[in-house]
Length: 423
Image 1 (cartoon, rainbow, N blue to C red):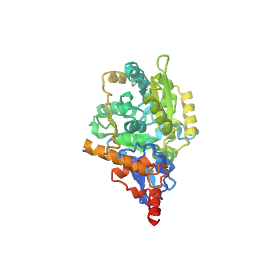
Image 2: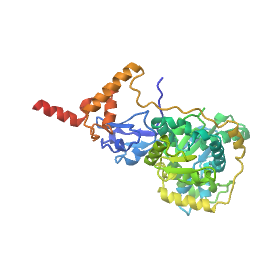
Image 3: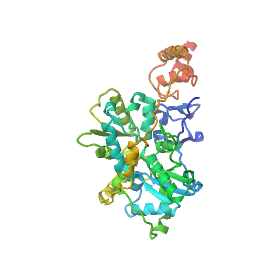
């Protein structure tokens, strides 16, 4: 049975003008314009969100779970990812924004930043015990993981092969509150406030996970709007909790690499999908074998650059850095997690490559189609104008062989043939 993939993208065809902005921008050639409307290739899309950012007509939009999803569960846990802290102006204390989430109906609020120190410890141990896979590639960005599956499958063994921090926290606190509250784990809803559509997709279809650990992914901008509307009512309410600003560095490009790196571990941090692709090509060519650990983020500036955030990423980065410098708290509650990691409780299944251009399941037919593809390429003008609705002539040739397009979609070749007939 053919694999289908969840994507946190909605196409609104009535708004599409066929402008090709998205097609030219997509790093995996997942988009086509057909009959003046955008179409998405399910296998190729990695949910990087580049198409959403460049669409001038709002024809491609992000999707996420509504805040109301929390009402489907008896006990509600919110996991707040690190970029959330940078969305609010300095006159609003970070602790106040957490307090608001309790007031909005969540029974417990967990910060992703809590796991930063313990995850750093896990990564250092993993790197030291997997020297044969050098360099290890960070698994924090789901868009990068999917990109590797699509374009760099030979690097799949190099990925840090442990559950993501959000899943680790979900597993830990679902078990904890199930025991404390006397509830079945299924009655506890664990939701995460996410900065990008890649993390929405990862929640709904986690790659390599034995099971889905989270119950929903809510856009940070939706949480932000609800909190802003609630602030006037909760400033003076008393909630007993401690925030963990010291771990907010996870939101920033470069910080994770700095924290994992030491005298024995050489690291590098990369952000922006184009830069990530360039680095992955170099890793594949063994140009970067001198590095032990490479952190890759598809969004520029790291997770503060996600399209589901509210604030400018550079302003958000500055605010988070201010919070980190002022931090006084250090949490030790998660120390038992390291034993769980050593026992294999956070292991994940081997990641599989995505076959994005399987011409035919029958080898003989696949060879025939490959020959046909090369013949079609010889006919095409090789100028990659995009007028056919595909990003380049190679992609059009592939589409023709797969029955998704025809040779007359090439307007240059069509005009040339018409001129020959008229002569």
